[in-house]
Length: 391
Image (cartoon, rainbow, N blue to C red; front, top):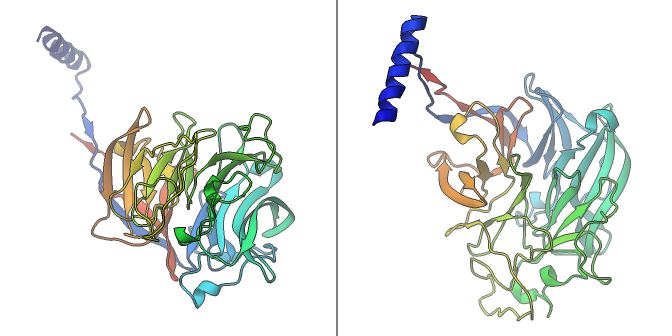
């Protein structure tokens, strides 16, 4: 009580000295969606060249440059010729195409961009591939393969393809295990097999070489592995406050997760899952001495979480440093308040306005955008129509 009394007294004295009224600012968050650009062919990722211009990868189309003001779209030429065909136009079950587009942290100096996509090989099928290219005058040149997660197979699912740079300057890449049904798993499941490139998260240098301080999985392991037990992770993002990496993971029948990435962690697939299996008769093997990492969060229903970010803008003060996660299955957008690696609160946004959401991204000035996964794909601006209220 005494502290409160002296605080009130101090305020009264202060007001008497300045002869100015006290201004109390409160915030009321009311997000709305506004279409910025449409007619995109299932956009997957966005990388801002400036506040007005961005590169957008169309999963079933091209790598394009868009102007968010003039609405102009321009195809970037020189994309690798081994990109898979647009089979999905005929068969909706095909997940192949172009995935992430990512700028080098030193892009202004070196013009390097990174691309993940489904690459084809004649007579063998497809595999997830990561390349680095130089972007000049809207053309890709000097294309270098950094990672090719074979074998090439005729399964067209769960490529992964999420990428980000960590605070350590290393490139982190998510690679899916590619199977649709668990009954097709080999005796040592793909995501648990250290000699198989699929079902892993990789940590590599920007030129594709392997960092000396990567986890040591042994001489027979695939180079560059950072974590294993991955089914179909697409989104991966840095938490600015801590420098930690978080990623989203698709389950089968439920089992969608948000995970904290740790070196040498095993996220369990398909030995353990927070959901069920597509193959009801599948019994996972027991792997001796294996230690599995639990998700930080998992849903009780199917969400199909995708490209997530930590929000650091100013337009939504109440969201500062929160994790935003879009979803395909229910067309949702989730906001998580995280403290000490623990989800303290979760809010589902736009529950009355659902749309398949592939990616959320923040512009250099902090504006919030979302990509919709549609044939007539859109870049949506998420705006706060109730800014600060002064009283």
